[in-house]
Image 1: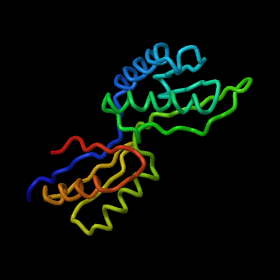
Image 2: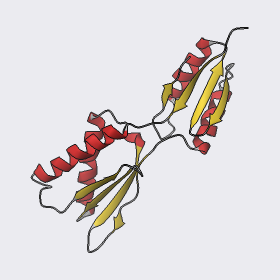
Image 3: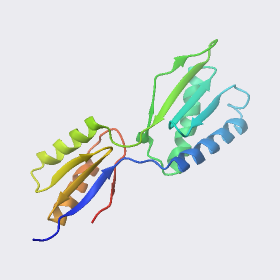
Image 4: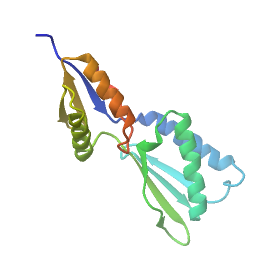
Length: 165
């Protein structure tokens, strides 16, 4: 019997690229004429994977988020990897918006992906392992079909396919 082939479905973001985009956006905040001196700021917590935008108004906050999203896109970070919360009123008339960098696939999403793969009636086996999903099959063609199927789907976060063997 031939050895089974497999690959892992993961959702990982290079935090160094997020940090680089954060640094570029922070620099643009100090130099851009409409944002200079507005009191808007961005903070990044690498440990938590949290971006926090503080701005004097909701409009300025959205402008800062647009600048940051542009920098993230240029650095190759998928914008689905950052989930933004609703703006929260802070002191005075200022607002604060938190964004969380999604790392790993949560259990519910992994189960939904596994169910969608099973519904394709391909001869593959899926197992959920912590924050990733392993897909195994004797046929490499079936694995390629699974990857093509998953690329067409939207699960609200970017998916990568690693450890293909």
